[in-house]
Structure formats: C-alpha cells, structure tokens
Image 1 (cartoon, rainbow, N blue to C red):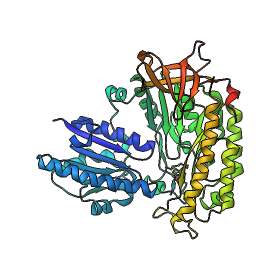
Image 2 (image 1 turned 180 degrees about the vertical axis):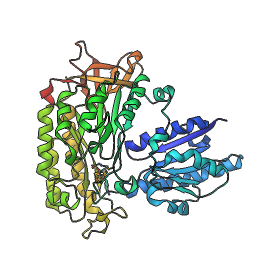
Image 3 (image 1 turned 90 degrees about the vertical axis):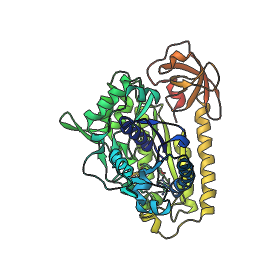
Image 4 (image 1 turned 60 degrees about the vertical axis):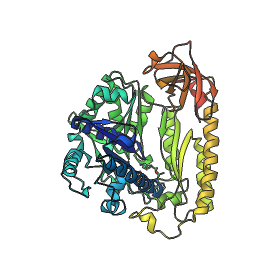
Length: 464
Ligand code: SAM
Ligand code: SF4
C-alpha cells in the first residue's frame, strides 16, 4: 500500500540530512514523499530548539496540522503527526500536552525506530515518546537511499560524519539535545560518499555540530578530519568538498594542511567566532580568545590565500557591554567576512547562560543586531564586488529562473546564474562573473578552460 509522507525540516543542515534519512527509512514501508502536507498520511516536523523563536514556530505549525488532521478525518482519512528533532528531545511529553494533535515524539538519536513507533501508533497506541539516547547506533539501522532518491535530491549532498557536542558553550542547547560527541566510522562514511557519487552527486558537505572534532575509526587507526578529508577527496566523481560547522579550538595542523593540498576542498570556511570580545568569549565558554581566532585565520590564509571566511555571531549575551560589542564590530572588519549569520541571544532552558545575571534588554539586542548586520553586509558586498571579472569553477546544479539559464554555486557558495544548456547540470563549468546582483552573481561560460577544481583566478584578488 502506498502512503504519502510529508517531512518539514527546521534549522540546521543536520536536520536536512536526518529528514532525508527518515524518508529513506520509510520508503520500504510504502511511504512516498510529497511536497504538500494536505494529502499526506504521515507528517513529520523535524524541529530545531536552538533559539526560542525556532522552537515556537513548531507550535504554530502544529496548530495548522490540527486543522489539516480534522479535515482529513471528515473525509475518513487518518493522518499521523510526528515531531522529531531537537524540540522533541528537549520537550518530550510537554509537546503532547501543548499539542494533543501529535501522535508521536521521536528524538534525533532514535528516529531509526520510526517504523516500530508507527506500527504502535497504528495499533491505536497514543502519546508515544521515544527520546532515550539508545545504546545502538542509529546509522546501523538506516538504509542507503536508492539511486533514484539521491538523483531527485540533486548533485550536492550533506553527509553527517559527527554528531553531538562536548564543548558546552554556555548559550547552547546542542550538548543536551544531540548528546555527547560521536564520530561515525571512516569506512561507513566512505561507502556512503561512494554511493552518492555513483548516483551523480558531485559536491559533498561533511556535517557535524562540531565537525572538526571528528575522530573516526578506520583502517585500524583514528582519523582527524583533515586526514579523513584526504580519503574522501579520493572518491571518484566528487569534484567539490566542504565541511561544516567547525569550532575554532579544533582547527589543527592537519586541517590547515588540507586547505593547502586538496584542490577539491572549497576555499570557503564557516568558522563561527560568536563574539569579538575576550570577556564575552570567556563567559560563553568558547575556550579561545580573539587573538587565538585571528591567528588561526592567518594560518589558514597562509595555507590558502583565496580562503573566504564566514561566521556566526550572537549579540546581547548576558553582560555584553557597548565596549564588548564594539570589539565584535571590529572583528568583522578585521577578518573581512564574505558573509555571516547573526542572532540575538536567546536564553535557552537548562543552559548556564539562561541563569546569568545582567541579561541584556531586547531593544539593546535589536539595535546591536542591526549595526552588526550592516557591518556584515558591507563586508559581504565588498567581497562580492571583488568577484566581478573573475573566472570561477561553478557547479551547475539546476535550471535557473529564466529559460536557458542554469543556477550553480561558486567555490564560495554564492549562487551564480548563467546561460548554459541543461545537459551541463551536474558538471563543473568555468564561468566568468559579469554582474553582481543582490542575491546572485551573474556570469557567462568562459572561453578559457578552468585552471583547476574550485579555483578562482587571480587568487590574490580575493585575499583579505
Ligand atoms: N557548533 C557550532 C559552533 O560552535 O559555532 C554552532 C552550532 S549552532 C547549531 C548554530 C549557531 O546558532 C551558533 O553558532 C550560534 O551563533 C547560534 N546560537 C546557538 N545558541 C544560541 C542562542 N541561545 N541564542 C542565539 N543564537 C544561538
Ligand atoms: Fe553549541 Fe557549537 Fe558550542 Fe557545541 S561548540 S555547544 S554545538 S555552539
């Protein structure tokens, strides 16, 4: 019997990956993915708990789901609503109390049990909650996606290599919702990457909450992320590699060396600093100073002069003064970020930051956020403007908005629009950037061949 599955992902790339794996897991049970919740038999909300707003979004979506479930019941159709992800892990029973429309709650480490939980739900069991951190490894129970499913997802893919976090930054819920840090075994990940490449994937992003803490076992030894990236780069068909999100403390010599040695490795690195003030970095328990961070960037840029940096920032962490915030503004200009995400500090239940005195008023946070975003946007615009006239390797991903146009991404993750025949989808093309738009770069297929995978020329034009 074919049933329809609607999965909605909130938050980070780890959730996007998990949502795909849930769909792969449920495919043999007869579930086919649909993009419309209205005709789904099973709805899974794969949730994010990182900020209060993200968590609250889930409850408003559940309000809509109640209506949808009632309408379906009137037509004699039964719809099952499941909440997965980090809100599920953090709030468990509370979700069913607040939203009785929910049939089952499953945490990020136990979604491999979904077929079982759904069978229990079909036997009319209500209020099913599965949020233990199981002893078994969920990855051992997750089937590989079919080639058709991989193809439908496009030529780029995320692969989770590391999960959980032991850093305990004082603002962050991840160590509580995702649990202790674990690294997947090398050979299993390589097999997953080979399968993706066989199905046409050309760009792989290795993901983890603290991805550069990776220490996976394989071939009789333990691999650092840098050592592991060298193995992944050997997989035939993988033209571009990325990894995210890294912690500045865990950038080691191996990792810096692969930025110099691996042409497949994207010259864009997301390295969140959160704050430019040593006092706030200390209170956040980030375990590095502003100077440590800048030194790491200098070493990375020595290894790869065209490296572009992006970051995450939090404004209004408890006790942040105007002077602390000025240090944050300064670091934005000092690094010259190509882009960054920035957030108002959101106190999260159970984290040390939530109990700290001197919480910053919301108006102050909003005002600082606006100033920070202006500084980030200014730097991003400067970076983008420097791209005009440069010939990039662009991985062409899908049809663009205009007829005859394709959309791809530059080595720096910028969307690039180019007139090109559709048979070039999935290939790395040389594109010369002619115009800088608000959300995209525009370019033309270059006459000169590219000088190497993921290269930009001239390299020094993009230096800090
Ligand atoms: N592991 C990554 C790191 O160490 O930077 C970040 C993971 S977190 C999922 C993504 C981003 O959300 C963080 O970098 C931080 O900027 C932001 N974030 C986390 N907790 C937050 C909070 N309580 N309030 C506001 N932003 C938060
Ligand atoms: Fe959260 Fe990242 Fe800090 Fe871990 S390192 S606690 S995931 S912000």
